[in-house]
Amino acid sequence: MTMLVVLIPVALGLGALGLGAFLWSLKSGQYEDLDGAAVRILGDDEQPRR
Image (cartoon, rainbow, N blue to C red; front, top):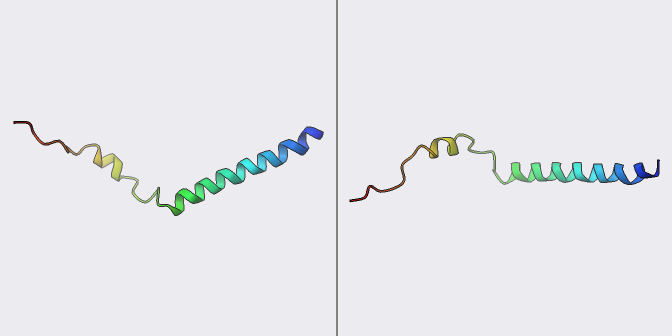
């Protein structure tokens, strides 16, 4: 029972940390262009060698 006194706040703290990281990623625009990387990999950026 005394272990729950430690584990419950730790679990709530980790949950809050994960939620904070998710909200930060939304605010910083990490999910703005989901298809851009998939299309960008197909592009040929290298110049042809002569």
